[in-house]
Length: 200
Image 1 (cartoon, rainbow, N blue to C red):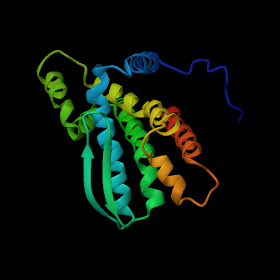
Image 2: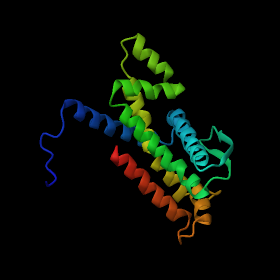
Image 3: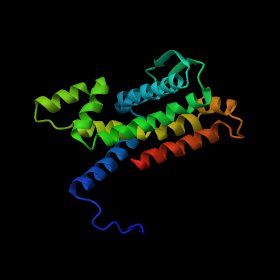
């Protein structure tokens, strides 16, 4: 069976609307990336980034000593033990994974409701969805999912173009026996993040 590259009759009305919404949200997110308007969404992303480090630590039998999310969109997860070379990339790859889950959740109202239950920030939108004629829950979940998936923009800022402080990629390069530096690992994680986002 050969692939149908013409994509004739590939999308019904709802699928076209979904793809158009993804495109519009992506453009809006990229246009507003460095503004305060995306700060709440970026802080959720930072939290999920740090939580992904913590989850990887626990899954590799380590101990999470602490986790912080800062108002300047930075964060840190202090760990002891575990497999460090799995813990370090888990932040960025985990953010993309969470984004993919939210994007998928946005395609079904029941799944969108469940995803919203995990994010306290969404609670107000959920109440509006259920008690009024405002029907934006699925769009908000989709928007957050795309923001998480677009974290590769932040990966570029944080891992590739960063010239101050040590990033996760720089730390990973120090412990990895491969001949890659931090920028190279940043590029690799950037591409992996984009692949996860495209797979959505």
